[in-house]
Each structure stands twice: as C-alpha cells, then as structure tokens.
Image 1: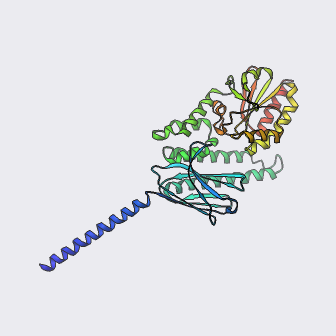
Image 2 (image 1 turned 30 degrees about the vertical axis):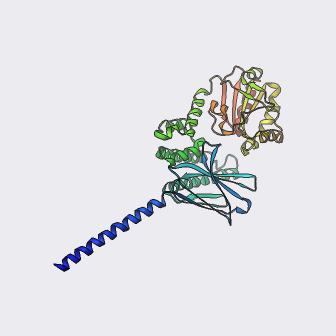
Image 3 (image 1 turned 180 degrees about the horizontal axis):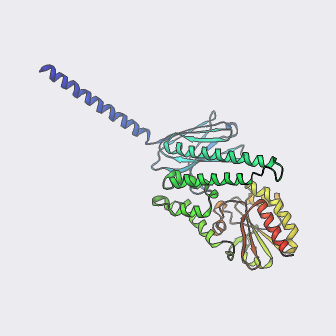
Length: 378
C-alpha cells in the first residue's frame, strides 16, 4: 500500500513537471512571437551607411518605423508589431540608386539578405510563402528573357518566337493573378497586388479588387486601385477625353481642353525623369514630334516625378520641346488615376474632336500608331 502511494505521488509529480514544462514551452513560444527581430546582411554594404525600415502607405510613400546603421555589412531591427503590415527596407547605394524591398512585418524572426541585387526575406511562414511566389515568378521572367534574347539573335522571318514570347507573358500574368486571387484576403495577397498590379489586365484586376473584403477593403492601396479602375472605365478608346488642369514648369495652370482643339492629334506622354524606359523612348517621340508638328501633332508631357528639381533637370537633359505639366505627386498623380494609368511610359492619343483614339501605348507601338494616323491624313 505504501509503495502504491509513493508510486502515485511520483506519477503526480511527473504530471506536474510535464505540465510545468509545457507551460514554459508555450510561454517561451509566446514570448518569441511577441516581438520581431530582423537580421539583415547586404553584400554591397561598402556603399551604404543607413538602412531604413518603413511601413508602406502606397507605392510612393512610407512611414518611418526605425533606422539603423550598417555595421560589418549587417543591421538589426527589433520591435513589436500588433498586426501584420506591408513594410519595406530602404537604402541608397552610393547615394544614387534607392533600393526598396517590400515584405511582411510581423512578430517573429526575419532574415533579409542581399547578394548581387538578389534580395530575399525569409523567417516567418507568410514571408516564406511570399518569397516562394516571388522566386517562381523570377524563374518565369528569366525564361521569358531568354526567349527575347534568342529572338533578337534570330534572322527576321526565321524561327519567329513572338508567339512563344506572348505565351510566356500570358503564363507569367496567369501565375501572378492566381497567386493574388488565392491569397487576396491575406497580407500575402495584398502585398502581391501592391507589387505586381501593373502587370494585371484591368478586367482581372477589377475582379480581384471587388473580391477584397474586411479590413483590406479600406486599405489605402486598395482604394487607389479602385480609383484607377474607375479611370479605366471613363477613358476607353472611342470615348471623349476627361478634362483636367495642371501647372506647367512655371506654375501656370493649364487646362487640357484648351490645347486639344489646336492640334489634329494631341499625344499625352505619361513619364518621369526617374523612369529609365521613359527616358529611353523619349528621343523617338521627339523625332515624331519634329516630323509631324507642322502637320498638327501636339504633345503634352505629364510627369510622375515627386521632386520638382529632378523633373526640370530631366526635361533639360532630354531636350524635351513640348509642354510639360505635373502635380509633382509621383505615382499618386491625380491625372494618372483619372486616366487609369498604372505604369509608365504610357502614350495616349486624342483627336481634334476630343475623342480618345488610342491609349496605353509605348515603344514601337506608339511610333507605329502615330505614323499610321498621319499617313491616313495625307
């Protein structure tokens, strides 16, 4: 009997120890997730002195959370996050190139690494899932680039890869749309929408945005997308243009409806001094302007610059001869939303009667469209 009581007492003590151990485990696990610790490594560190941690407001703006110096290629951020938010690391390389790497800021241990501009964020389950989606997209982009390079080297008319390139682009778009749609009411889906919205056809974007519910429906970026989609609906080809007013480089407010009747065709060129493709395509548009200006071609530039001095310097550097307008609000440009423009460069063509002839053009498509219009007028 005595041995039986001792055995029961020992079993009871074991149970207490087990319960206490489980309590400690749960307590420690909870403690680990009551805050976040971000450990970062940047290979190109000799050109960087400070890393900023910011909460994303929209594609242009962020709110500073913390900043840390880079020491021996490394930085550390610690803090507490009540809910998961879209955030980003920001730093300047050699005071010229600004790097932004978006991720999900949440409690837990997060690792950021940058090797040869390959920047990854891992550590929490949601960031791991996000990174796997980004990695797969990068592989698809790599396959498409190989096809494009192969096409450049091929003899015209021989081994034409245009259809393969188009299918590659369609496959890429389908993958991103599927990934966003699957995760849309989670922070993962919101960040993917945040990053890749410009690649999504407007009809598919509308379907995705309209399916967003709960707290995400009032997210500033989601509201911005709804404004842009409204702009898309109001500016279809064949519809009258939507009028607007913007200041020029001297601060004088110009009304677009005063310009349209003075030209046979008026081109709206959405661009920015920081946009490399815009700057690359501008000389071609200048050639068209010089070729057709005396035949009735007008051009109005609308800049997505946020820095006024950069805007003015960009105009001077590129020797742009036409009227330039801007609200200097960057990607938050009111006219960009009004016309449903999600990426630049973007060329629009308005005829003398104020009807939208073509839109969302760039590169050779813009050149061909303008040449065709003036060829038809002869």
